[in-house]
Length: 315
Ligand SMILES: [Mn+2]
Image 1 (spheres, protein in one colour):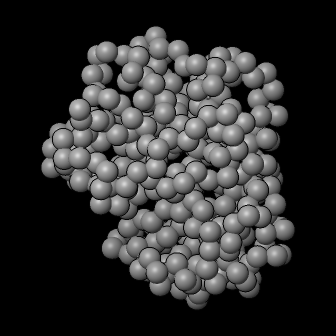
Image 2 (tube, protein in one colour):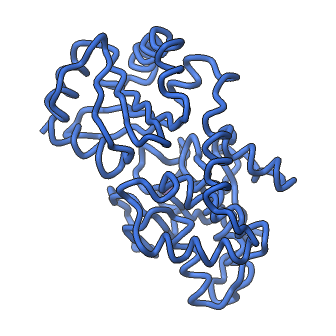
Image 3 (tube, protein in one colour):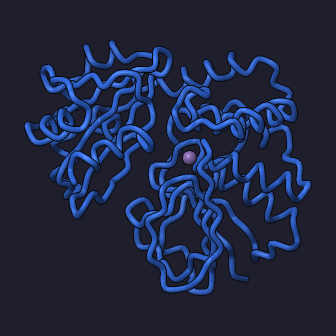
């Protein structure tokens, strides 16, 4: 029997994993969606934050698959991404039947498909909105995960990507999840996210990256969201800069940036591995880099604040 794989982006964050699970749940509980055998999967291992959440809830992570496990008659639904650079490598774009996302669209497909894009703070917000439209209520565990995904993507409602819809629907999810102290839960997630001591410099430098195409230039942007910005800078800056140079060689990108974001104090510092990134970052954000680090102030959103400024500086 053919399957419908529901897939988040490479190097999944909590929203990518949870949105896939949430859509699997919705598809299973809603006959009219009629996707054969909907199956949430991941294409890279869970990050520390998502692992923490699955361990806490004693849940199994979705199955990790490669493109070779998808048969020609299977269907694919993308969640939390749409651009080719962020998709499972080797995925046949002709098998994509639907996309649910909250990022800028960059698509050129050969066939008409279902699209559900909304400029909200997380894909999980969009899927909970769809659940409500169809009167499908998530389980307490799924509601906990979906709340965590919203809090993670919106950085506890502090990111510029946050909308009133995120706040409103997160509150409803908190009620289903029976979580009264949402701020406490946010801090718990931040701490799990910040636990990067087990990662090598290279793993940390590539922990949550996206590769963008800015006018033909391939630009790697990794973001590390942490409550230990100063400590990471003091102890690991040299190693991270070296890892970024390695990324440029191995991934064949033109530029590599690492945004080190302090999610409690709302500040981002960019790590810039060479003169090229220093020039582009100074043009994009103003100010002067000191020892390969540029403080870009109270910006937390790669999608709304960091990537667009770099794109503009390169155009
Ligand atoms: Mn997301």
